[in-house]
Structure formats: C-alpha cells, structure tokens
View: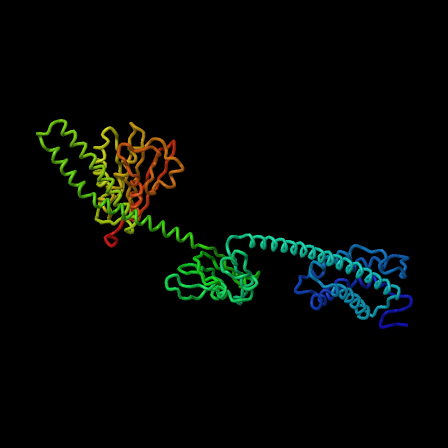
Length: 530
C-alpha cells in the first residue's frame, strides 16, 4: 500500500540516501520559503540558513543508526542543534510561531522531494524523520520561549526599577517644591494651572486648590509698572513656541487681594520625551524690597557722583588762580629764601590738588557722562610717550625710565588723553617699583593697532587685588601713598581712556617677572574720529 510515493511497508530505498543526494537543493528551497513568508524582514542567506544544514546532517546520521526504535518519545535524546537554532531565531526577531512553521516547511519539502524523485521509502524512516523534527521543534521553541521569558523578566525588572526611581524623584521634587522660597506655578498644554507650591500661594494670594484648573493669566495677572494698565502674559507664546521668556521686566504682579509686588522670574516650556511642549512652568520671587533698596542706592550713588563733579569743577578756578599766583611769585627775584620755599610748597600742593580734581572730573564723566570724550587727531604714540616720560622724570629724578619702540605707531588718537594714560601708568610703576631699578616702556605698532607696555620690578600686586585693580578707589597695594596723596582713580582712568579708544588694558604681576601693564589701542581712520 502506498500514499503518494511513500511506502508504508518495508522500504526499497533509504531516506537518508535521498536527503544526502539532494541536500543542497532541499536547503535552497527551504531558505527561499522561510525568507519570503516567515522571516521578520530582510535577512541574509547566512542568517536564514542558520543551523539547518547541521540539522539535516543530524537527521541523515540518525536515519542510518541501526536499531533506533521509532516508538521512542519525540523529545528523547535531545541535541543542542535545536536549542542553538531557537536561540539564533530569537536574536533575529523571529516569532515563536514562525520557528515552528519553518520546521513544518522542511517536512513538506522532504515529502515533495520523495515524490519528485519517485522514491519508495519505508514508513519507519518517515516516522523517524518526523520524530527528529518534532524533537528539534521542541528544543527550538523551548529555548526561544525561555529567552523570551528572560527578556520579559528583565524588562519587568527594569520597569519596576524605573517606576521606583520615578516615585523617588517625584517625592524628591515634591519635597523640593514645598521647601522652595521661590514660587512655582506649572500649567498644562492649554495653560491651565496644574501646580502651585506654598511659596507661590503666598506670593499670589491664591490657594493651590482654588488655582488648579484656572488659566495661568488669572492667577498671575500683570500690570504695567508705570501706567497701571493690565498687560498680556506670554504663557500662550511659550506654550506655542517653546521659547523661554520673562514676565517681570517693567511689570508688577497683581495679587488676588488687589495689592501688587515687583518680581523676578523665568518662564519656560515643559516638554515630553519627544520634545513636544506639554505645559509651562513659572518660577518667581518677590523683588519689591530689593528693588526699593537698589533704587535708593542708585539715587545715592548718582547724588554722590554729581556732588563730586560739581565740587571738583568749582574748585578748578580758585586752584588755577593759586597756581598762577605761586608761579608769578617764584619768578620774582626779590623774594627771600623763606618766601620762595613757601611759594614752592604752595605751587606743589596746588598742582597735586589740581591732579586730584582732574581725576575726580574724569571719574564723574566716565560714570555719568557715558565715558571719557576724545578729540582724535593723527598722532605718533612714541612721540607722545617720550614727551610724557620727560615730564614724569622731573618728579622722579632719581629713577630711570627706558623707552623703546618698533613698527608703525601712528594712528588717530587723543594725544592729551594718551599722555594722561602714560603719566598714570608711569607714576604707578615708579611708586610701587623697587627703588634703584628701571621702568621699561615699549611701544609696538602693527597694521591694525598699537601696543604699549610698562614694566617694573618689585613686589607683585596681591592676587586679591588683581581682579579689581581697575575699579575706582583701588590701589595696587594696601600701603598709603603719602607722596602723591592719590585718591585711587589713576588706573580706573587708564582703563576708561583705553576703552574710549576702543582698546583695553591688562596687567600681569608675579614675584619673578615683576609687574607689566599692557595697553592695546586699535588704529582708527578719520571716519572714526569722535
């Protein structure tokens, strides 16, 4: 009796021989079917083939085993081939059903091969092959399921760990929000309030329960600080565009009881993991007292600077008269030696006072007048520096001032202001430099600018002073300047003059290298003259 070409009695041909002869064609067909209908997306031939050649050879070898009992359980004598195939298919993303079906495809292709070759095989060989396939299916699906369960357990563990971390962070966030001194208001994507922390409750006058669900504009309405008119809040713009902004500039927050407060704030978008704006958060604090104090301080500083300017300006004329009178007296031959000495002291004191007044006037102009004004003209920085150092030498005859230069040092500068800058830096170097050592001045010109450096030996400027040495009323040392009675504006004015020219000044001071001030000035054309 035959079903198709499969003999159900004793076989005339061995199934193992047929599989061995047509193994390559069998695998080629099997790969085509699996790749077309069972694989989860495109796969290479090597990926599709996987362990199947080994399994076919295993089947051939098992069919040739003498005395194998076909009545054994299908899962008896498991090999590692099915397990390896199941593991590989899991890594490739095959579904469990597809793994079962691909073994079924193999059985059908073997039966087709028997028909095509018109072979007669024993039912014993067919049953043995089916047992081997069933065994492989059991091995492969068990391994696939085991790995899938392990992955699910791993994912669950991660999810639990992530969930616990979220809970911890939420608790931490809640504690932080409750203890923050700044107010925090959050909204959903529609601008409705979803959170109001205790500080925000105090600042707005709203309770969290009453504010929830209300438009943010109703909880933090704004009015113009000058006109008192209501103004629109930018919540809608932030929710639509996602750009951070601020509410507090020139505005007051109107509290629920009708009172107002000045505030500082930041308003930002809240985004989900995909970057979509899902809400907004406003962080704000009461700045009413701070602004009041700042306004008072600004008023006091302005008054002080105006007062300095007025007093300094009014003192110039009488000091000028004193200087002129002292100069005339010094030119008179009939003065006694004692009178001449007194006149010299008067002239010296008046000159020192005039310098202090000039510094105070420059300070006032720099602070209140928008910077020191310049009168730019074509100038040679080296010529200006040389003439200025000659004047400084008269006050320090015992000291040496060395001047060198290189390059083109001509440009459009304010010669009087540069002379003032050089005087201040040279006097500073001579005052604080070590006695008996020279002060070196070097001027370097390039196509775009001029660099002026002044170097002196001596104790370095303390590190805590370097950061503020160009601020007003600061000195390079804590020692009192008894010789010139400086008010501590010299280096501030140097910096102001350099900035007015569009340049800069810097300082480097070390124990080994001494102190070097470097002034960099860009060259300006006539189009830039002020």
